[in-house]
Length: 141
Image (cartoon, rainbow, N blue to C red; front, side, top):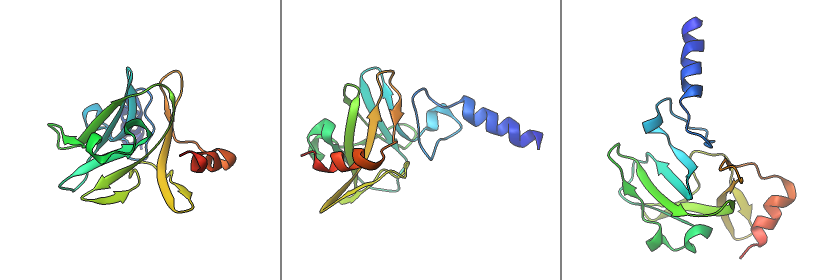
């Protein structure tokens, strides 16, 4: 049982600042999901795919401006300069749209859907959208 608590402590202590995701990895270099570093929103995913793009409010939903490149660990990575605020996005994996696989948040609107996140003033990335905030996200152009 002590081994379990030691491993759990290691996992919790190794997480990057401002990072919230279901698929948090125990080693900093293998983190997966979304985080805010400096003035950039950084997306990183380990996906079995040939090509991955990310589109959202931060790149005007343009797949050409969201092409993700593989890093030395084999993860698809892209970053975008942004300010704290709310951003909608989705991944394009081998030509097919998909939600962020590292969070359960998916905003379903009539005729469209997307993942969404909020960056607080302190740089923390959050996925906590409830009630009317989801409705307002659907109304944004």
